[in-house]
Each structure stands twice: as C-alpha cells, then as structure tokens.
Length: 129
Image (tube, rainbow, N blue to C red):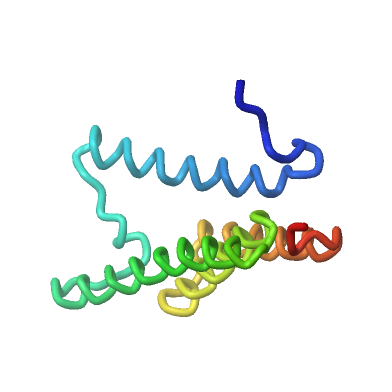
C-alpha cells in the first residue's frame, strides 16, 4: 500500500500545496467536462479582443510550464522536492501576479511557496543527500 513520503506533522505545508493544487485542477476539470466549459484564462485576464486573449493565454501557459520545468530541473539538481515545489510555486504565482495582478488563489500559492522555501531552509533540507 502506498504511504506518504513525508509525515503529516512535518510535511503539512507541502501537502497543503498538493491538496490545493488538486482542488484547483479537480474543480477546473469538473467544470470543463461536466459544467458547460470553463475559460481558465478569464480568471487572470480581462481581455475582450480575441487576439489579446490568445496573448494572455500564452502568458499563463508560459508561467505554468515554467513551474513544471523549474520544479523538475531543481529536483534533477538534488533539491529536496518540497523546496523545488516551493520555488516553482513561488515563481508561477509571482509571475502571474506581476503580469495580471493579485488574486486570492495566486496569493495563497505565493505564500505557500515562500513558506515551503522558508521551512526547508530552516530545516537545512534544501538539498537531498
């Protein structure tokens, strides 16, 4: 039977990020497939012109892809996955806040990412052995 990599007491912030992200993806998926569709980018962009919407969609896609690549790249460089995920989440949320402005979801992601980074630095577990 699979078990958690990190204990709940020590890894609660990481699991909060995982559960938050699962909720975000799950609710978006339910709306997309069973709720008549969803415009993911409308939560970031106020663009009304189709060309501007495509540009904004590309910015969101770039930011999300950067989160994935940065997390994988840092993990490949022996960063603890919690630190890598924290840095990736911070870059993702920070870039979208910079581009589109503050939203509650992005602030939670940014603060969680920064919290994970801080937690791993304080534990001296930024890198794996």
